[in-house]
Length: 490
Image (cartoon, rainbow, N blue to C red; front, side):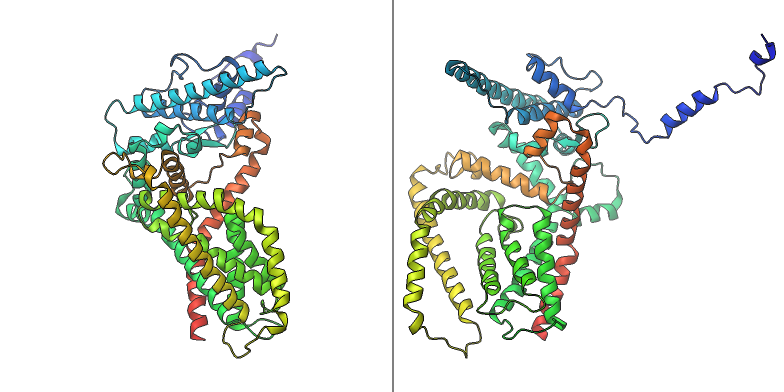
């Protein structure tokens, strides 16, 4: 063997090129300083599914010190485990076996809720600062290794046990976040940074969002009260700006986060887009759709949707009442209306046909007859809702908690309504805090199946929600206010 081939000199590299390249490729990847030591949530959730919930606290990662890190990880693991159990429905061929499985499942959920509350109370056994409480609620925990998905304790508020949801410390911490946008971050950002952080507080962002809604409703109301009377070949000037702003705002609202509250925006966008190159004209289906959308927008101001004038007041005063009204309408009025709706429609059609030859059309009115009729019906609906709400409050008044024994203003109507109001409050804070995190059925499916290949779709949804939220709280309100003032001046 050639000795010079194995002889090392002072110019010989300590590592071979292959080893250096492999080490360089590993070091060139961006990694967190403690990436190896950070525990992930899903391995522990899967362990609980296979072996059951441990009887003691020995399952905690050894590298987590007692305090915020350990308590936060324990809570997020237990809450994620509870989220995955909500979709599990025991099934068995035998009746007794199915009943037994359902009983065990319910008992397991109860025990899991007790463990969650115990973990939270153990964290509060020693004095904690505001920053520590916010860290345990807002710190993100990775779901699995190599996945961009993460989850926070506050994201899983739908699965909070009643004792945890109604805890005073959580309420005070969320109120502080709503007012000052503090989420446990260290106060080393300087005076200007603290000022910028205060300006971006959730309550201020909601105020900007509400200003945009008011300007949008003002433009829409001015249009339905004074619509164009003839069709045009092409929109121009203030008419073009008004149409573009209405359609843009409506589409942003629909695409930001779809729910039943976005139906009026969808109706408005369809009505204006279907009327191009002109605008919705009186005596047309598009104009009637706009009238329905305006009426729904006004009614939604009393419901717990965002943005709303309700959230400019005390949450614990307005949210329980709003939830009570909405539950009463959705559980009592809407089923009865659905039952009698076919008959009501038939009677209205027959009445309209019978009055068709005697209908007096006043062409000299500033507002179309459809607008007057729609707002008259809206007034009647509001009067009915007022009477209905008063009657419902009178009926439930004997069951209300007495002021001397009332534990919390949230629970003045009932404990269940108080819990719903608290969950809605957390959702409002999350809406204007970010980042957007989904914890619905798709989240639970992702946790169970660990779809790392589908993580991109989650990023797109989060990016769309964040982008549209930025539009609705800064440029769109200013644009809508400017167009409304332009419309008034012109």
